[in-house]
Amino acid sequence: MQKSELIFDGNEKQIFATDDSTKVIISYNDVTLAFNSIKRAVFKGKGVLDNHISAALMGELNRNGVKTHFIEEVGDNEQLCYKVELIPLILCVRNRIAGSLSTLLGVEEGMKPVNTIYDLRLNNTRKADPLINDHHAVALGIVSYQELQGMYAVAEKVNDILKPFLAKAGIELVDIKLEFGRKVDTGEIIISDEISPDTCRFWDIKTGNILDKDRFRKDLSDVVASYKEVYDRVSKIREA
Image (cartoon, rainbow, N blue to C red; front, top):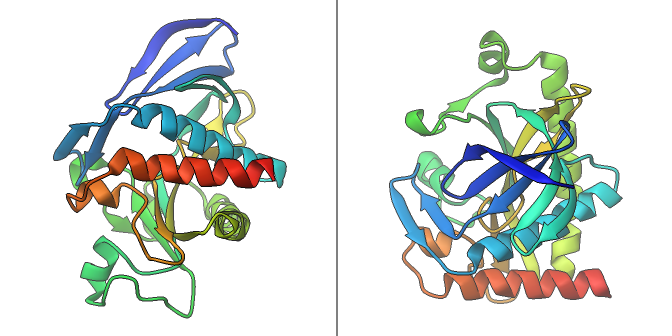
């Protein structure tokens, strides 16, 4: 697959066209952003780890019947993916209440609800990714009710697959931010973006130690070391 012109130049990722109009190459950078891009830093080696971890987790989803944009890794920090038209929504699946939701609800971070929480957000950094409901998404013409039902079903399946998979690696999936896109050739809605410590909260099951981007948000040390810990553990499970 031949990489050609740059079609998206972001802080954390770049996307390149290929000689196949239905496929792109995504390149992961070492930049880390938080709080709607207000906080920024560069951590050498993070892009490679994000690439490997997302490839492993999306590969696990593909093997279990959940369709994603991921095809294969084509370099240390690059992967070949199906080209999609991104749907400007974020669907968060929460197994514990953490981060901004704990502040919003006024509960202690780490509270484990009796249910799984699904948050729908408008993917708009300038508006701080506001919480919206299904009716808002349909009214804005982003999706239909039927498409939303399908996205919720996929999100539930993603959680059901990744929770036990990561638990084998001693990692609790606290929450996960999912994005979706429509394949440019068929219009089929599939998982897009990435699944990594940048888009999930990963806690060590035994110690509760944070292994994700919250280390950056909370000004903790060992950001890259924690990402590498996730990668090493996930790799061992895949090889077992």
